[in-house]
Amino acid sequence: MGRQKTKPAPKLPMATQRLAQVIRELGISRAHFAERLGMSSSGINALFLKENTQISVVQAKAVECEFGVSYRWLLDGIGSRWFAQYDRLRPSERWLLKHGSPEAYPSMATMVDIPMNLDLVFSKAAHAVDRKNDSIPAWDGSSV
Image (cartoon, rainbow, N blue to C red; front, side):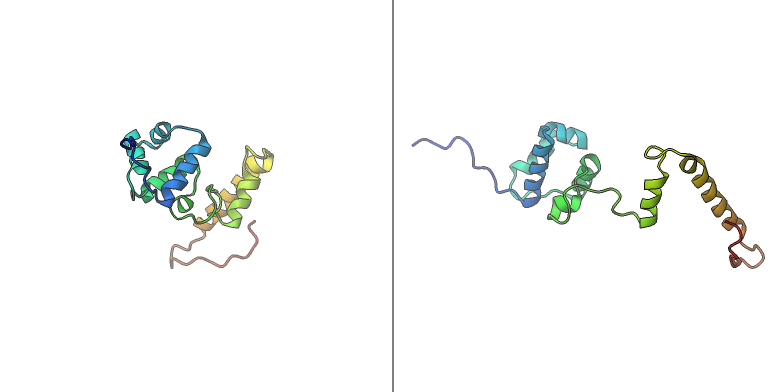
């Protein structure tokens, strides 16, 4: 029996295994993956060739920004794999995006009325500050 020609593959951390899964699913090479993240090929390969090499939070966040993979899922396996950019918004902000996006639903309301009303409300609130005692007067509901 001869000498073993290659070393056995190292036991990779779970985060690195998840990263390999993402690269396979994206259907791109490690070199192209590294290039899109601004890393060298050797830098990405080090994650796969050296046992116990961990993915940093900065690397995981870069993967999230570039490919839409949740950094929490990548590092810890927590949550959904794909990052939903609107998950962190308040319900009112989601409504505004849904109904106020000119690309999704162009109309007079989304293009003119909503922005003008928001400007009107915020400009009136800014001018309503009483300069003498720095207090905001009570709103009487008549200016909307």
